[in-house]
Length: 160
Image (cartoon, rainbow, N blue to C red; front, side):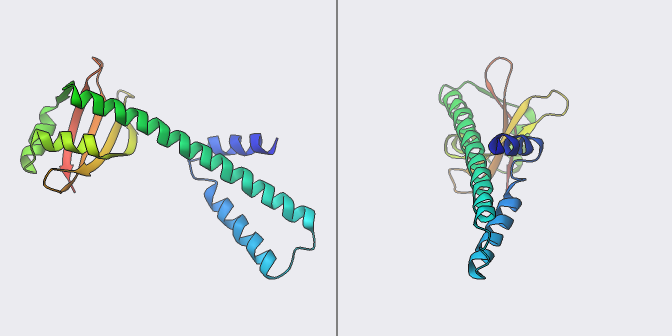
């Protein structure tokens, strides 16, 4: 029951909204141990149980997010390898401004990581911000999405 309640609290707030609570509880439990304030053993055990539940929920959600991003990133990489991608005119302009070539963009997607998933305000499509290194070693970010045809669409590219 406790875990179900904590999951419902977690789902209503931002992903790491429970983290400050965990940190506070861990600090409180440590202070109790240091000051030998553990007279009420059942209350202390209950705090340990709550803290453990919160940490387990955070770990489950973190693992889910990373698994999801791995699947998305692998799909992007397969599309790059099969040359199933298009580059927007804006991305070509940005590439020219930053002196980047198309193989730099391919390298970023093939070796980089997803930094963030964004939701397009007008179309409600998911966009992904990837960060990686070019063949020359520069750190660059790429914004991509999956097009309606199934191809990967490179929206923009910018050097950091």
